[in-house]
Structures are given as structure tokens and as C-alpha cells.
Image 1 (cartoon, helix red, strand yellow):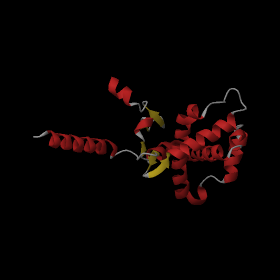
Image 2 (cartoon, helix red, strand yellow):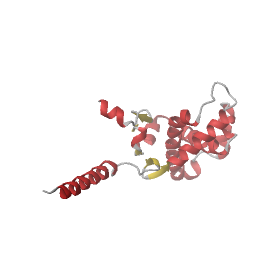
Image 3 (cartoon, helix red, strand yellow):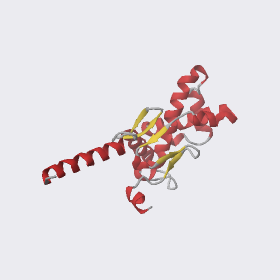
Image 4 (cartoon, helix red, strand yellow):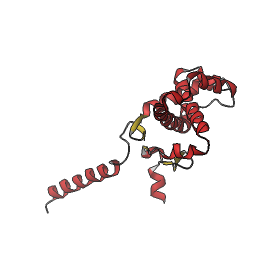
Length: 175
């Protein structure tokens, strides 16, 4: 085989390899898929920036958007789950007033001072209220969702409801 054919075959195999690695994972710009519904990376960024602003006046909670990002990814995933579940529940879903009351009772009102953080907080509180209303059946609620993370975040641990692994290719290379 001459060198130009080798180069062409090598390039084709490289493209195929990249396509094969990414075929089962969320597209670039997507942080996660929840039952096929995309959570854009921009939403996680917005949540992280908003909550950094909302929490900046509390020395114990003041964190940068990058420090908040892993937690806000979890909030985005659980918020999407709760949004889908609330749609299925209809009138039985937690109301806006129940969500606000829950947040006030737990001293979480600071999260409502930035609209971006408030959106994230409402999703996670809705998730908590739904899980609480289901009691011992809450595992069924969480288990009914398929979550795929962008590989840069690691993989979703369904039992812990959080990412596992670093998502770093250098960590994969070490193992």
C-alpha cells in the first residue's frame, strides 16, 4: 500500500474511532441526557454562575462557579427528572407555594436571590418533595430515569444520584 493510501486509511480509522467513542454519549455542548432529554452545558454554567452570585455573601458557602459546577450538574439532572415526573403527576406535583415554603423553612431563601440559581434550586427542591411524597417508593422514581453524562463529567451513579469518576482521560490512561 502506498503512503497516500496508508494516510487515507489511517485518517478514516481515526475518524471512525472518534465517532464510535462518541456515538453513545451526549453531544458536545450537552452536559447530560435524562431519558433522552438534553441538559445543555450552558444550563449547568448558568446555574453555577448564578449560585456563586447568590452565595457570595456567606463566607462558608462562597464558592467559584467552577467549584459549584459538579453539584450544579447533579441539581440539573435531578431537576430534569423532577420536571419530567411533575408532568406525569399533573395536579399531584408539588406546587410553587409548596416549593417556596419548603425553601423558607430550611433557610434556603438566599438561593432565590439570583434567577439562575433559583431555577436550579426549584428543580432540586421539587425533586426532594416528589421523593418525599413517594416514601419507600422513591427508589422506583429515581430508577425509572436513564442518565447519560457527557464523558468529561464521568458517569452517572444511579445508587448515589451523582457522577462517579473524574471524566478525565488522563485518569483513564493511568488505570
